[in-house]
Amino acid sequence: MADAKADPQTPDPQSRGRLIRALDRFAEIGNKLPDPVTLFFILCAVVVVASAVFAGVTEQIAQRDGTVRETAVQSLLSATGIRWMFENAVTNFTGFAPLGKVLVVMLGIGVAERSGLVALGLRALVQGVPRQLITAALVFAGVMSSMAADAGYVVLTPLGAVLFAGLGRHPLAGLAAAFAGVSGGFSANLLITGLDPLLAGLSQEAARAIDPTYEVNAAANYYFMLVSTALITVVGTLVTSRVVEPMLGEWDPKRAEAPPEEPEAIGAAEKRGFRDAMIAGALVVAGIIVLGVWPDSPLREPVAEGRPAVDALGPFFHSIEVLIAVLFLVPGIVYGARVGEVKNDKDVAKMTAETMATMGAYIVLAFAAAQFVAFFNWTNLGAITAVKGAGILQSIGLTGVPLLLAFLVVSSTMNLFVGSASAKWAFMAPIFIPMLMQMGYSPEAVQATYRVGDSITNIITPLLPYLPIIIIFAKRYDREAGLGTLIAAMLPYSVAFGIVWTIMLSLWIGFDIPLGPGAPTLYPAP
Image 1 (cartoon, rainbow, N blue to C red):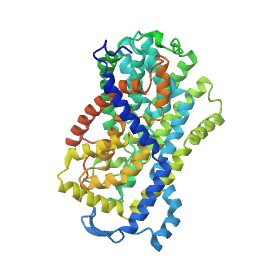
Image 2: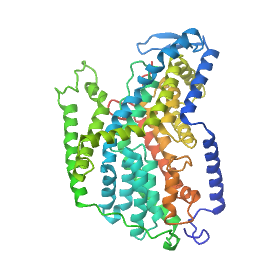
Image 3: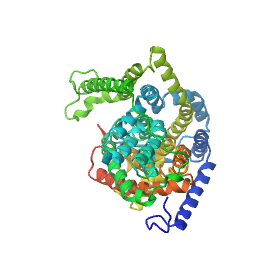
Image 4: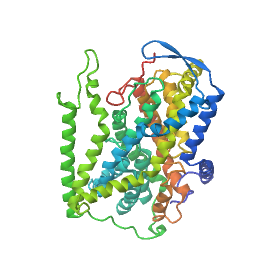
């Protein structure tokens, strides 16, 4: 890195020292938090105690049919409550909406990832573009890698550094561009990823505290995330070339731990496999489109006169997780067969089994989260807290888009202390979704706001699990690189993403643009 005195664009060392100390403090606080599983059981205990303390507190809850029902807090420490907790522990878990959806989607994604298709696709994308578009290709590939986040961090980030070094540019700028796309653009994608059904399931569970029939499908934020992909690609490219590269200055190869390795060329067998996999994927996409468009498709149903045409796609959206799994599964099998990774059905079964083995931690977390959500809803604390919270917000005049932006700040700040997107949403959704529904915002809009807030601080939180790996990659090109070097390079992306993405969200909500198929921004609060 260029000397600070010689380069006026380099951040002041004293200021950067304060930043590092602040981030170290965040890391210290975050590391003291319990494991997410333990945290959810603690939250369960808090709900149990709170239900006993506030038992009998009532509130007038408006219903979807226009009536008003007096609702009271139910105690989990009563004989009825204790019996309910024991009798429903299993059904709370098995009925937890995100559980089955995520596992089904991961069956398909797991095969595509373990066959090598995802990693090859990322390599082909960044190696096959013109030199002048390499930065945009890196950021875009990083955003797209959220379909299999491990591949993005482990494959794309070091590849970005190698490519920039080969072009005579600072390798840490290439690493930063790829890292910004992978982590900062985590919630954006051109495809539905495993995160979509997970968050949608949690949002649906939370929304049903207000509206027991409300459904949030996996494509609830698809339109918004589609446009976000282009936005993050453009902003990430500009920040890399206009801010990060000038800040880093000229790269001195003598600072590298070892000469940079050239990325492996894509072999003929891999190219044939990738071509055939893309053909298979195109056929699957065509089949999915037919199922959604063909009037007599079994995944469409008649709609009553006066209802939106999108309501006919109810069965299609109910099947979206299975369709996504097939979309990844078929190309994954085709590619694996062509390159020798899949020789028979046992290899496919092994890949799916290995994928499920990696989901063990999620399944345990889901059990704890399911109990918390169920406790919160059964006690009526969720609905009553939502109504009272909405009343407080109305009394202080915080409504409209500023209200959602305040929630965005909360979610981005929380991300500095709790890294898991699903863990945070599992305990934030039951509180904020009912509350903001009472203020006239749909669960889909609240979910989209959360995703923006969660993404923009991903690249600067010291608690990101992959941060140590990224620092190791950086040290290959600058042996003195550390947390401060990385944070200084990534902070401009976080600030730029935060400003531009927030403006886009404000305009989207302000003009009431649908966030996805059948996903409004406003909720017709009774």
